[in-house]
Amino acid sequence: MIKGLLVVVVTIIVIVFPLSLQGAQVAPRVEMAILLDTSGSMEGLLEQAKSQLWKIVNELALTKRDSKTIELYVALYEYGKNSLPQESGYMRMICQLTGDLDKISEELFILQTNGGDEYCGEVIRKSANELDWSKDNKDLKLIFIAGNEPFTQGDVDYRESCSLAISKGIIINTIFCGNYQEGINTFWKDGADLADGSYMNIDQNLQIYDIVAPQDDELMKLGIEINNTYLAFGLDGEEFKKRQQEQDSNALSISGGTMVERTISKSSPQYRNEAWDLVDASKEGSIDLEEIEEGSLPKEMKGMNPEERKEYIEELSRKREDLQNQINQLSEKRDKFITEERNKLKDSTQDTAIKKAIREQVQKKNYTFE
Image (cartoon, rainbow, N blue to C red; front, top):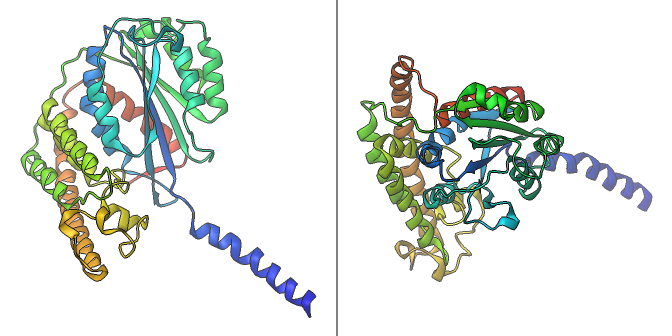
């Protein structure tokens, strides 16, 4: 009898356990490390990175694998700055891979350039080893390194670093800030070829300008309005919400178009704030509205009973969803207008280079675009 019972139990475990794992399957990931040369000659590159982060996010927001929307994680390094310690190779990891896109934006706006030596091989090796890359071979793992000095500088052989990266499934894309042939002659293309990536060149001093679309004004208004649906909770919640508003101001300081791109990002699944926003946290199931302490609640919700809390969060969630739908509808019309205007022009900036590479590499990994 006992033996028979054990057989039944084992059979149930064998059948049910894998099914439970399938139900708990995590979302596919796209991980992107941006390695920026911040030496003295790279002011233009840095300005492009500030202005075009949200365009790249919006491109990746369209990506799916096996009909599942991806989760985007971004890391940031700087290299080639004299003010960084020599023993570190004049480089540092600014942000570990994170889904907190406001944090990436904040750090980009803090960055300053300064003269120095640019060691591409070493910064690639560091990022390949230091970052918490996914262990899932299906996930897309990308490095984008941008600079304008020979790829061979420094004591670390770039060929060894590129081989290390691709052995971990990390694709390396190189962006040379200068003449296309000069980038080939200084081994930027070779670095990309060794790690299954793309070699690109850009004019880092090209003046960035917006194509103004008829939908821009309304989109900017919606971008400000959607902030009112975020409810900061916990000890640091208000600081995170303040940072959200500061990144709006930073985007607007670059241009109206950059602010519009940031607004569009807020309507995408890639803009996740469950660490501090009660609406996202409730949606993700990372917090129990009945169990959360009164002192951690935002002032708008203090004194509410559990049922009132639930109704309030659901109302804000519906409002945010409505705003996101409006943003997405306007964005589609705007994209069509921008594409038609852009096709009349020829430019070569950081976002167009990165978006082209992403499109190609995403499709090789069996990801699709909506």
